[in-house]
Amino acid sequence: MGQGQQERVATSLAGAVSEEISASLASVDTELERRYPGDPGTRQPVHTVYVPGDAFTARTLRSWGDQALAALDEHAPDAASFAAVLGLEGRLAEDVYARVRAKLEREPVEDLRVDFEDGYGNRPDTEEDETAARAARLIAEAYGNGTAAPYMGIRMKCMEAAVRDRGIRTLDIFLTGLMEAGGLPDGLVLTLPKVTCPEQVTAMVRLLEAFEKARGLEPGRIGFEIQIETSQSILAADGTATVARMIQAAEGRATGLHYGTFDYSACLGVSAAHQASDHPAADHAKAVMQVAAAGTGVRVSDGSTNVLPVGPTEKVHDAWRLHYGLTRRALARAYYQGWDMHPGHLPTRYAAVFAFYREGFEQAAARLARYAGRAGGDIMDEPATAKALAGYLLRGLDCGALDIAEVARLTGLTRADLEGFAAPRRGDLTASVR
Image (cartoon, rainbow, N blue to C red):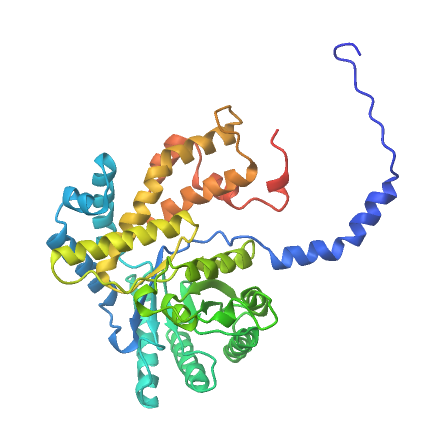
């Protein structure tokens, strides 16, 4: 065939064949769209801080930041001393230390949960009523005066029979208080703990539906996190993955799955000395959670460490190394959120997060720039990898590890461009690159 001559194209199937197949899969297409809408594209906090209801005050967020800064001043007063503890080197050490201090001054907590469950315990009803009402008032005031964390809410008591009524009443008081103070803030997050079966998730959905109807809210306005703290939440008696059924039982309201390190470990009989987020039992549970949540728009959060950075400097440094290592381990496994139990954990939370994004920033930016420009290179990336690269850069921007100017300089892309790559339309991930 001569150069430039048009290729002859021939087919054997009638057009009706494709139409029949499409018709037969129409219901499947609809179900896939419903079950797997993809990531919502909103900011995911790097951690969640739990504060007992009776300990929560208007100063809690600033107090945590001040205590974290004081810990740095006492135990790592400069970049070199902090880097020596964590194994950071060179320019990265200076950059991370400066960003950690700036973060603690500007936004020490990204997500705060006022706790009415294990951290609060069982109190007289009048006391819990008043504490729930106070939490609503303080959170409403914080959002009103600009001192709130990006995300705030409560962890109620669970749906087990012994505490169910108390949990429902606390949630009602809290949400009603927010409504009376002007409405539900955009950053509102609720956590339902110790879920063992999908029916408890369904009960939470019905509860929120009733509240929305009573207050004239848009249906589906209130979402919630599901806390995974029991073996039954991972594997049901019939051998199915309960957590996958829980996500569906939430009817689109589930926003996250949070791993509860110590309750889950104890449920499996792991001795106290070995209860940790890197235990094989924890890895199994989180892997099941991760696969169940993939594509659904539900985020997964790691748990916490109960080794607190308190006491003499040597003990603080040991606790910091442990927390830093666990956080870096979680990030490498795509668990981009975790729990922090003490203000002293904040320096190493942010150090681990910032180091994670800054170490890989230049390579990720270069790869995404090549992909966006369809340029060559030593790595041929697929659309799915471009999605992951853009998501990596966006998470780094959201938490303060990266600056938009440096990302734009190395990629030639705006934030809107990054969001387009990170949340492609359905079908784009399998489309060929031309």
